[in-house]
Image 1 (cartoon, rainbow, N blue to C red):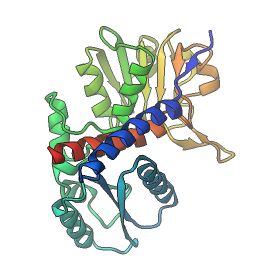
Image 2: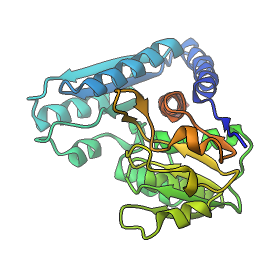
Image 3: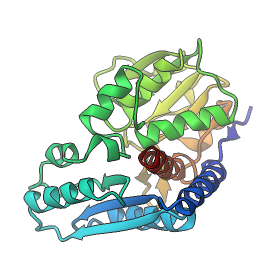
Length: 283
């Protein structure tokens, strides 16, 4: 068996095209959608991510505003700018590119974003709403993973899903979305005993720990769907995920590539959340 690839690039293109149609309709009514990105410091990866996000906005007809600060900016400066963006009716979504410099309290900054503009889905109000099944915004990466499952006709209902990782950004919201889709969900992490036992019993595995080749062929049930959220570099500097892709592809039924899998879907769902925020504002 050789797993079929879930093409995140192709699916993201379709989603961006849908966003572009909706953005054009809003603009024609005098309500052009707007997204603000707050970038603090000069982390090279963050700068690349922000450039991609701004390019996505341009391509989809979404206005973008970049609020950029050097690494020495104070927490108060950043929060003051966020509060101004909260009050700006032309801005419908606000995201803060992480990580922030160590002298800035990430929690305080994220909580300064209005829940009505929290298109990353990181605010406590967003997390709570997701927990009770009434999300305003779904966290972008888990949201993208669910869309990928949907694209291959994989209904999680009745299936056993294992999420490896318990971060607030991916692991926890991923588990909640799968649970709400009626999967039986196991969350595994660094203290899990016999991780391989859990993954070998999973119909769906989502790997999101940031450790290269953490999921190996012998850990995967034949025919399982494997979603690789990891973003790592190998010894040659090449981008790779948490999954030993070449080996696991010989066992799994479906698998996401890295790059070209979850990454473009995360950005696509950011645009989806932004256009949904703009549509709510225009009502």
